[in-house]
Amino acid sequence: MFAIFAVVFRELLEVIFILNLVLVATAEIPTRTKYIITGLLIGILGSSILTYYSGSIDTMADGMGQELVNGLTLAFTALMIATAIIWINKNASQTSTKIKNISYNITVGTKSIKSLVWLVAFLIFREGSELGIYLTSIIRTHSYPLSEILLSVLLGVLSVSLVSFIFYKTSLIFLRKYIFKLTNFLLILVACSLASQAANFFIAAGILPELINNFWDSSQFISLNSTLGKTLNILIGYDDRPTLMSFLFYIITFIIIISGIKFSNKTFKHS
Image 1 (cartoon, rainbow, N blue to C red):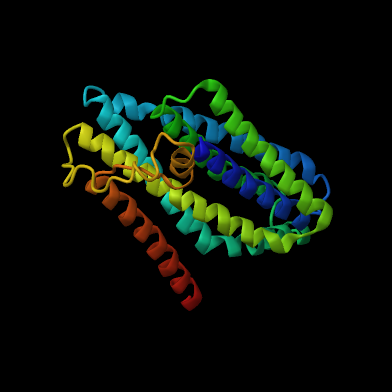
Image 2 (image 1 turned 90 degrees about the vertical axis):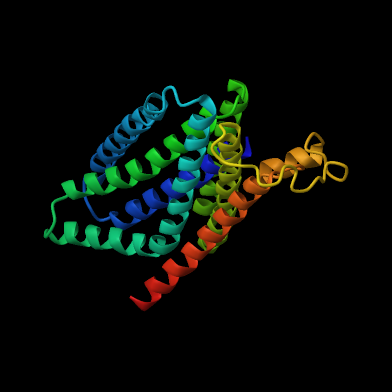
């Protein structure tokens, strides 16, 4: 359930910060509220439609086996999380500047205020569609009770609301980068865990070999059924008896994401 909480918290946190940037940057624009609300509604509608049709993966893979469908879904979700993390690390620093430039052009009359609608719509569509696809993918491949799903989403929303309230009241904006770094790292672990689970589904479907069954056995030290084991499984995708293939999927995913972040940061600095 940690994966659902982490995704909800991370995506909503970015939405809140982006909207805050938009509100601050457009403070001098009259009637901005109705345009921002219009953009919000368009973004929510668009992301909802995309999330709804993302379920077509089941239809596309019909007859290929539920294990394969689950594996493809988890692998696709891990890929999306990985690319989102890399993109965010490269482009987050430019978001504020872009918003301010659009706001300035609207204020001086070189750009229509309607562009504010599409700015907000695009930002909400991007974050909302990511959140929707992540959640549906995770829920589709796990037998979580509805009550636990709703609780995780509610905790994510409440946590973001609390953090946003603290930022607003205390102006501790400098904490933002640390919270984003923490949530990014947690999402990296979520992506690695999903990739590892995808490997297990591919093994069950007979597509991939185990290479080594029970690559290690730490069940006598930290059993997956123990409280600590379940906690580590939630936090980092811990498995007390993984196959070598699932372990390789986990490690390779971690290396790819970290390398992608470092490479994107390096190219951004040189550009």
